[in-house]
Amino acid sequence: MSSSETLLWITLALCAATGGSEVLYKKRGQEVTMDCGDVGTRTANYAEWKHNSVLVFKINTKRGGVIKGSAAVAKKAKPIGDSLKIPSVEAGDTGVYTCSGVDINGNQIKKEHKLHVVSVSVSPSDTVLIPSGVTLRCDVEGDSTAQVQWKKPSGAEHHGSPGNTVTLESVTLDDAGQWTCQIKDNGGKEVGKIEQVITVVGPLQAPEQVSGLTGGTVQLPCSLPILSSLTIDGVRWTHESPADFHLLNLTKVSSSKVKFAADPRSGNFTATLTKLKPSDTGVYVCTVDVKGQTRTKKLTLTVQGGTTAATVKDPTTVGLWVWVAVAIAGVFLILLAVVTTLIYHRNRRMRRKVRKLRSVRQPLTNRTYCQCDRPVRQPHPAGKKERPPPLPRYQYDVMSE
Image 1 (cartoon, one colour):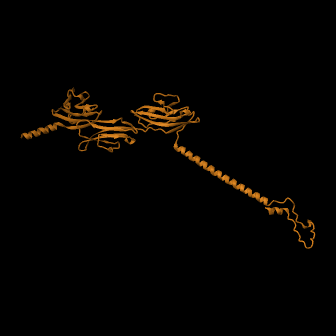
Image 2 (cartoon, rainbow, N blue to C red):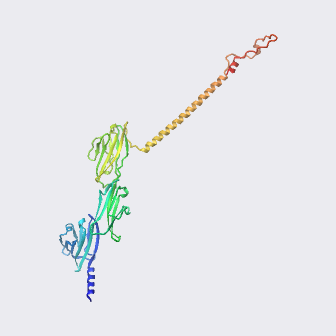
Image 3 (tube, rainbow, N blue to C red):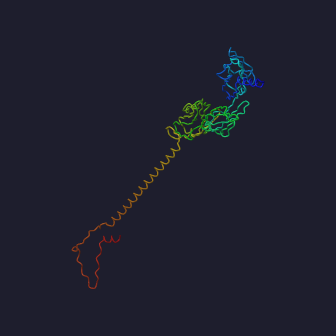
């Protein structure tokens, strides 16, 4: 056998006894476990772990002894059989981990792991109030030529990817959910992914106007749609008009006439005011602090006369009552016009009837038509024309009309 053939066989034997290199991408704070050899096919009798050529620990699996080295990661690394476990990785844990030793058959074993710690950060917070902005950043520690791009909760690539940074100027409810930092090699193959959850809260909800009656009770509605796991740092109610006056907060009530309608930590910040007075009229401000962010909502309270409970003004209801009033007024005007017309025609008929009665009025003296009762007419002298008798009085009345 020639020397070249001997060298080839030695190389093949070393390759067979040596494990391949594994590349790992882990998010900061995650757990990682690295095996010494092929799991299920080899059990090491002796193993030695190094981080960037610095000893982490030596393991004697037969006797159960462990000797720790001087590597920084040795303080938290744990031997699990012949494997190495890091409960919570940090940026300084990035590097090459090498396991070498002898298996139960006396064969040399060696396996290399390249660990890249991925740092995912969200600024200012992973809980964002609408319409705040937020920035997501994904950094791969170590000597990595991997490409990074962000994917939205819907699975679509974010506008501007690839890139390790995503900036949302004004978040919406569509931005809530699980964002993915996808890591690819130079060939475009996915080699790792890190997930980050963004919680979007809001907007703060309250009506613009509330009305109440003197002596009654009114509620000032204010709420924030939130998850049950979200912590509310503070809630305050302030009477802005006529002067700033802190009315209510989570730990202190400034007056016996005001209280929270429910537990404000549930997201319902509604305040109840009792024994209303005209001086309670004004602008009220609901202020909520969540994750270092503050949101406010204003509403106007109007106190009117009366003693019954208050109601929230609904613009739709107010408009409906206006139309009802207009319709009633229109019907009233129509009825008034009809009655006026009927009275006019009745008076006109009465006047006609009076005129008709006057035209047929009977004379006050008796009318005598019998010729025998009349005096005998004397003959006129010759040559003179006879004068006609006078007309009865009732005929004069008829002619004068």
